[in-house]
Length: 277
Ligand SMILES: [Zn+2]
Image (cartoon, rainbow, N blue to C red; front, side):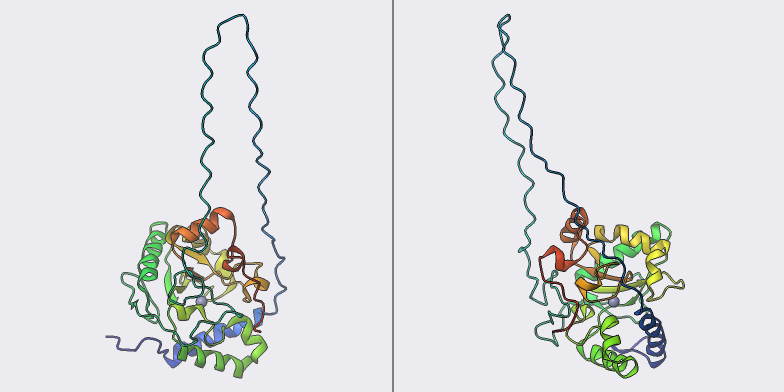
């Protein structure tokens, strides 16, 4: 029976993660990936004028068809439907310039996940828990063995993690791979780190695995986005993390995928947040 309280990290596991994070820190020397400015502009879709019916004096013209109403415009996605400031909102955006307010905010609807492997038994907010269970189930149906390796971390846990990274690697390096307390998305209870039991645990190569690719393609159908995508370090402030999935709900996740916008900052028109103020 596991009576380990939420947020508690066994020393051995923490050490393992620290080593993995050490790998990440070394990878921090990566050349920033070429920024793919996904500015896919729709070709101008000016409607051509309908051809005027040619006058036909030889025959009796049928009564002109009534001009059909123009097709109703696709309703604009309502970016203000949910708050991006309220830490309890499914759309809350936290980054280096947007700490959670209050910084030690904690969710009130944390639940355990069920039917999926969850390495440290960390909980999630209820909607995110149900969604990730469905996502992992669908991944299994597609032949991928995916498990949760991190979920909710409270403020105090993030304080301990971040301070440890700073002691080991220095603040500049730590800030590239670990959020400062109050800025971690894991504190929202809406984030899971996923893995496939392979060799890319918390490693950038996870995005190249079959499971990582499947998740990238299908996560939006379950309401998740890859929060720190490739080529967007200057926008999100964090190195690519193909294992870190943020629940925002299907409406927003699918809209972002449809529009080809990969970061919450760009979708909501927020300034890039490469550094702490
Ligand atoms: Zn994460």
